[in-house]
Image 1 (spheres, helix red, strand yellow):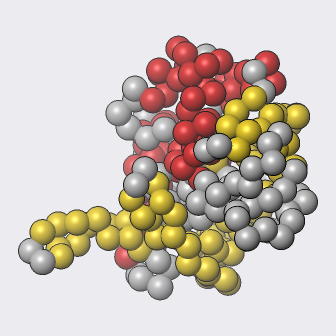
Image 2 (image 1 turned 120 degrees about the horizontal axis):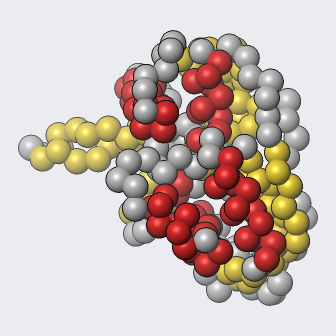
Length: 241
């Protein structure tokens, strides 16, 4: 299930381009405000968080040399946990004000969206970039190594991560774990700063082939890693935002 959250910028301050970490932090803070027990249940869990965020989708962007200047935007929060989405959405309407850095916002509406028409072959477009990493030796020490779709290990790590998350959420392996990215139609490299660390990630349009239940889980919880930090949220190419 997804919540489509409509927001209005209430200050004149432009929004810094590198805002996704602030958005992820605002969601965590808001969840703690509206339902501390649910927030503690999700964020004390040692495994995966099982939700993902889109970037802000700006509806009336204006030219600005100082950052992002706009008035209205939307973003999505998506999860296979329906109760989490419902409670989170209700709380956002009850307490609608939040900030990203020094820029103030208010929530003007929330719409719950439940997609049901999943197929074995689908084409997706990222609405927040996909982040995938591995571990490699650099100067004799193991270190995190961010991957792009031009690296074959990108696909192996994405698949392995998806199956681990599915098992963590459902408590069992999928009945059919077939899943692969058939083709990447477009790919754009991005770099975001997350809690002081630079993360290389990818905006993509890509085709997947796989078991419907695994494809649905990937859509709801996100592709790749660090989904709750605002990575890996997608829409079907036919969907409108």
